[in-house]
Length: 186
Image 1 (cartoon, rainbow, N blue to C red):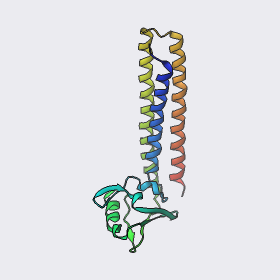
Image 2 (image 1 turned 90 degrees about the horizontal axis):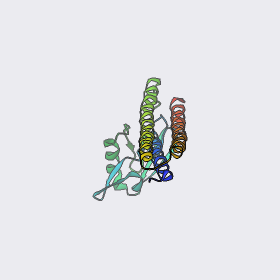
Image 3 (image 1 turned 180 degrees about the horizontal axis):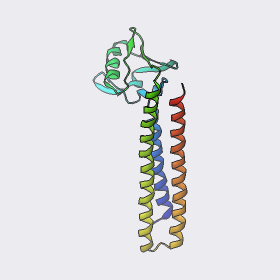
Image 4 (image 1 turned 120 degrees about the horizontal axis):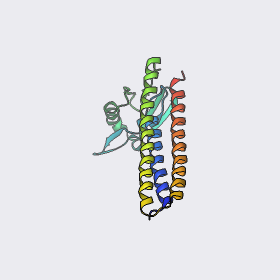
């Protein structure tokens, strides 16, 4: 006999992971504004090992269009520049010997629309993942009836599952809506 609460908690956990993936992915998309989370995936060669950029330098945004990277070790400037160039950030770093600056150009209207489409694709993947979790759990519940779960319990569990599903789909929609506003704001 399966425990319905455990199955629903498992489903919620998977749906929450899909929403967190979306949030993380949207944070990496440039919206024309400088955001240090864009550099989260950048790894720098530091003393023979690859480490995240934020472990070898201080990252800040002095204004809306600039990220300033101040390395703790001045000798690391070349390695940091190389790591940024090799990453998918798409911005050429400028350095003055002490600070590396990344200047973000104002995106065109067409580029903004492309970014919104890109966000929506990622959002759709997250929604599909949430729906897949729902259908997997529904299958488990149907099989559980054969193993002795009452039909009333199964129906109640399906209703609870649908509520969890709806909550995460709504959360994904809100995340996409917020990111779209951020991108389309000039």
